[in-house]
Amino acid sequence: MKGILADANAVGHIDALVHQMQTGEWADLWAALGLVLRHFEDVGLSPDASDLEIWQTCQAEQLALITDNRNRDSVDSLEAVIRQYNQPQSLPVFTISNKSRFRKSRAYAERVLEDLYDYLMRIDEVRGTGRLYLPQKP
Image (cartoon, rainbow, N blue to C red):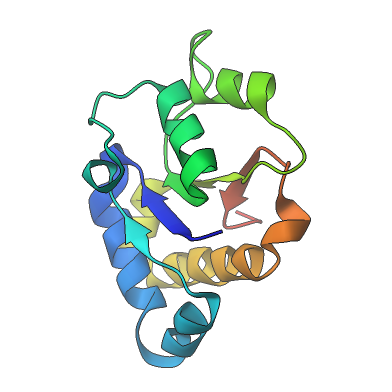
């Protein structure tokens, strides 16, 4: 895995999360994992790219998507794409469970960060799981 892709609808939240991941006590872990943060424009995606195109780009570029609201409302939703195309070697999609709480609660945001790092350190163990929620326990 090479890094993280910030979903277009949650860029500010993910930028803040990654900033925290790159500072203080967490900076060494960021560096040790060799992570980079990418945005849609960095990988040739438009803000209105389909969920299939986003998922395929993440898999091809070895980027873990972090999102907050992609659901299974339609046959071409991210959840439907994962169910159809997920393989044992596929990177999971990380979903922030509660964007509002993430924004308002420092403790909640810290749990998101800790759980994300936990998953990233064990990325080969969580490949093929499809979607993982952050934090693990609400």
